[in-house]
Length: 253
Ligand SMILES: Nc1ncnc2c1ncn2[C@@H]1O[C@H](COP(=O)(O)OP(=O)(O)OP(=O)(O)O)[C@@H](O)[C@H]1O
Image (cartoon, rainbow, N blue to C red):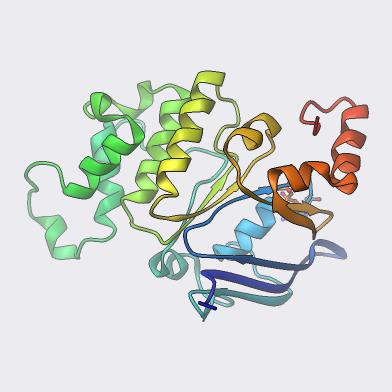
């Protein structure tokens, strides 16, 4: 068997006496599009924070391409090929779409090349404009983009950095239904040549675009499988339907 891209064993994160992650094992193979779901407070963002070096685990290992990420700083992990989006936006509003992408791509270029005035659009930036559907807005200021377009720009800013693993935290939150559909198509396309882990609450979105799903609950992996397998699991129905009874909208139906 070839080595998985990401291999997490016995991961624990404690905040004071509270265990946000409590013995998580997770394996993601190369080329997978994996969805990570779970009710509020399940530990999804904490898991991403640990993979990207933002939060230090209290126990367990995170191996990426066979290398241990524990103890590495955030920028080192980025350089190893792990990219993430945040729930809050990181685009520069005063810069154009093209300038934002170019800046993100410059992260891969040697310092001396940044001092030279660049002519034209690099191949990777042109490809990102196409993939994200933002080519027609290349010269527009990022500040005028719609919420959806801004999210696509952020995904574009990640892919120009050529990560081998992309971690996306709730990419469709707050989007219109048209924007969600476009994002689903974008993720499917990005996943053709990247490994992608998506944190998502939205069950309709999952039904349409997810293949493999991992369910987190109270800091542990409750179950894993196809969307159909996970939806049919009575424990998953209980945690979501239990929430539905409390008025939540994202129940498994
Ligand atoms: N820095 C922190 N200090 C203390 N508790 C924290 C901290 N970060 C997260 N937690 C707690 O850890 C638990 C897991 O939080 P986390 O944000 O990972 O959940 P989540 O599954 O991403 O939830 P949501 O869907 O609401 O974003 C929550 O109970 C949260 O309150």
